Length: 333
Ligand code: ADE
Ligand code: ZN
Image 1 (tube, protein in one colour):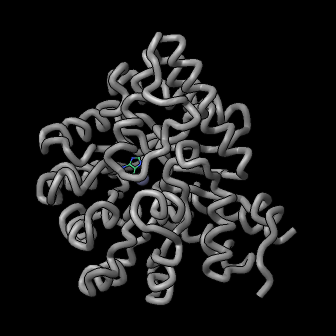
Image 2 (cartoon, helix red, strand yellow):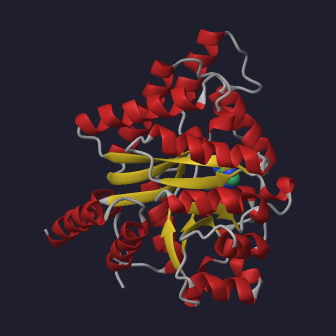
Image 3 (cartoon, protein in one colour):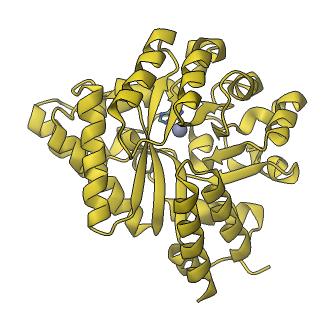
């Protein structure tokens, strides 16, 4: 087994399925926006995310996103992410955007600006980026249904799926609350993913599969705490979108306490992602290197992980085949 080099990881065409636009603001952009709107940061901008729990982390995301008060700025934030992603060799990403964090914009303004930023990025040759509008765990059934109805009415091509994020531990059990919105999302052809098995335990994973009908789970790493949840993940061939550093910041004390090796040994299908790259100070290349080191992966294993990400993506089969060809061509050269 030869460990992959940094150059090999950089050159690998990549797909990312679990990244929040809210977690992609560069500190310089945060400082610039804070000055523009006249808001003092709660801490120096380079220490804004020196937090060790999800609740404080999410509050800080609210503050950062609240600095965005017009569509051109949101368009630029989306384009900034695309420029970062291109630099990482990411060809395609599905980007979670939760409108509740963006208090200065309506849902319509936010997604149309993000779609425009991604359109401009694609025209600039930076890659293909799609959107996953996200429900906050604390929201009501009605609010979740409204978001799905809005998605249906807006008919934006870049929107390919529905997500839930936020603090499962603070919200309590919410699977039943969101079942009808997820059923509707399935009916209108959206892909379905949800955060679970992070701040919720294995019961959140069970609910996501049984009540929300997801094909992917963001995190999901606590499914092994209950054999029935693990069995469901395997039986339904669910892809877990795993974020190692995020989990080691907000959930586990270190990588050796992380269950990823056990999940891999159990045959769980998973991908490697960043979650919130700028706020965690990480990159996708860095996370792939970390996974390779920790799991003893060679280049072939990294390529297989990219294929799993393509398989689990919510774009069309035609788009997936094009991504597979790009991956095979680059790897073959
Ligand atoms: N929003 C941004 N990052 C998140 C995380 N790790 N868990 C839940 N919601 C999030
Ligand atoms: Zn996440």
